[in-house]
Structure formats: C-alpha cells, structure tokens
Length: 430
Image (cartoon, rainbow, N blue to C red):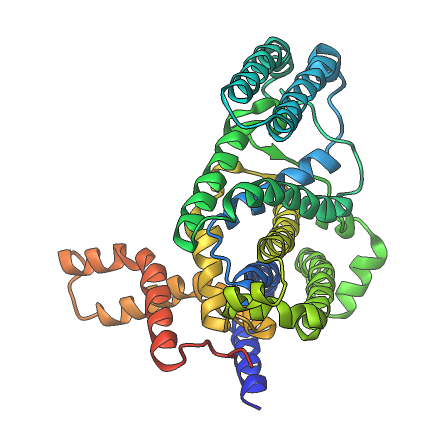
C-alpha cells in the first residue's frame, strides 16, 4: 500500500501540472520522465545488482544519440564519393592495428621483445591510420559544411536506432569494462567519468561522424508531424468534435504517440529486469555484490559477471539516449553535461531505492518532475515573499535572479532528507 501511495502521489503531481498549466506541458514532462526511468533502470542494474559505481552514464547516453544519426539520416552521397572509401580504410587500419597488438601481446612471452613488437605494430598502424584518415576527414567535412559536412546515415526507420544505440553502448562498455572493471570502486568511477568525457569530446570534434557542435537537426520521426495532422480533414473534424483547437490537439496526439512508444519500452524492461532479479542469476549477482570473496570461493567468476552486468546496464542507458534524441529530433553534443546525464540519474536511483527496479522508476518520474517544476514554483514563491519589498530593492532583485539555482538546492535537500529518513530509498530493496 505504501508503494502504491507513492506512485499515486507522483501521478497526482503530473495530473496537477496538466490541470494548472497545460496538458501539453504535463505530457512533455511525462515523456522525459519515461526516458529518465529507463536510464535509472540501467544504472540500478549496475549499482543495485552488482555494486558497480559507474559515473560515465553521460557517455553511453551520447552514444545512443549518435546511433539515431547513423541509422536514420540519409547518406550524403557527395561525402561518400569524396572520402567515404578512404575513411572506411582508415577505420579498418585502426581496428586491425588494435587487434594485431592484442594478439601479439597474448602470444609472445613477456619480455623486451614483446614490448618492442607491440610498440612497432602500434607505430606502423598509427602512421597508416593517419595517412588514410586525415585526407578523408578533410574531404568529407568540406562537402557543404553549412548543411552536411558528414557522411550521414543509413536512411533506415529511426525506431531501429533504439536497439542499435543499446548495441553501440554495449560495445563501448565491453571495451571499457575489459580495462577498468579490475579497479577499485572509486578508481572505477574516475575512469568511467574520464572515458565519458572522451566520448563527448569525440562527438564534438569529429564533424565527419555527426557534424560535431554544428548539430544534426531534422531527424526522422516515428510519429506524425503536427502540421500533417492539422492538414488532415478527418483529424481536424475529430478535434473540433472534442472541443479542441486543431493545433493543440495535434500536439497532444503526437506526445501521446511518443508516450505509447516509451511506455512500451519501459514496461518491457521492467518485466525483463524483474524476471532477471528473481532468477538464480539475479540471486548470484546480489551475492557477488554483498560478498565478492565468498561468491568467488563458491566458484563464481566475479570479473566476468561484473563485465556482463556493466554491459547490460550501459546498453539500457544507450537505448534511453537514442529514445531521447528521437524525442528531441536533433543531436546536440554540446548539451551532454554530467550534471544532467550522470548526477541527476544517480539521484533518481538513490531516492527511489537502489536494488529495486520499481524504486528506480519511481525516482525517475519524481526527480524529473522536480527538476523541471521547482524553478517556476520557486519563482512564484519568491515573488510572494518579496512582494512587500520595493520594486527596485537590491535584495528583491537578487532573490528573483537566484531562482534558477533552486533546482540544485532542491535536489540536495531531497537527497539529504531521503538519506536521513529512508536511507535505502523510498521503495527499498527487499
């Protein structure tokens, strides 16, 4: 009953937003709440199931966003003709160099000869890579840089980008996990944060891949465009029967379509994660989390299981990133900030209840609503408080200008209150 009451309270917040502001606003917040809940589920799998402290969530979300461009945007034929083949050759040189270096390192006996051989392979491979990469990059980025300047994508339906985003994030997580999962938890956090910043730096600077900070706009949509609905006589007639303006009705319908897609993904993930949590595999993961030494003594491969859960959680975050970019309709690498895509997701998991999937979902909806709404609410309250002061009062102007910081204050206060009165979260793990 307590859990149901908490979900009812959060639902009441969204309903009140629709009644007091607008249903368009409420649905917009709710859709991002669905995506935030998916991200929180991914982090909960890593931290709540296995105790992995990953603060590189931002990087995996960004890779999911990149997947929408690589999958859904039409290919730029001029760019492919100018340097596409040479760019593929450069990437093949890079991948081959890494594979050859790893194979040589594993097959040769430790010593000076192995070190020299590996160094020679990487030196030669780097030269070949740059020989092919630099001219291809310059040729691609020179093709109409105002509107393209990149290779484009495959021109496939954008819904395919959601699982592809998960796969892309999973591949990156495999590479990161192979090198970083042997570190202690605090060092793992530093490593994942640094790697996430590297991913963002690549997205910002490699224009041939996703236009960098020039952004990719006009991504295809899996739902109708509002203007197309307004030009449809049947839709306009139906909206008029319901007493709605066609423009408002079209906006509501598009948001409801997104809600259906995002809710289907979230419900499927909850079902799968709940089944996994209650399975022998889930019990094994929690045993490893609680006592690695005892689990290893029972024959469990702790490192391999950590890598497995790290990949799964990162894949879910990557899928959420693809969903978010689909909703925005554009890829903007400059907007990926640790505060929004790492810290805030961790607050959702901690407040909701780490180790409990339903708690993470609750935290996703609650914290996202607070993140969006506390600023206008705080502005309203501050106007009431400062009403007795003169219009030109320095104190009044300072307080009103500081309302934007109430978001951070609210997150800190909520986190402290939950940790003080419910340290295991609003819906704790059983």
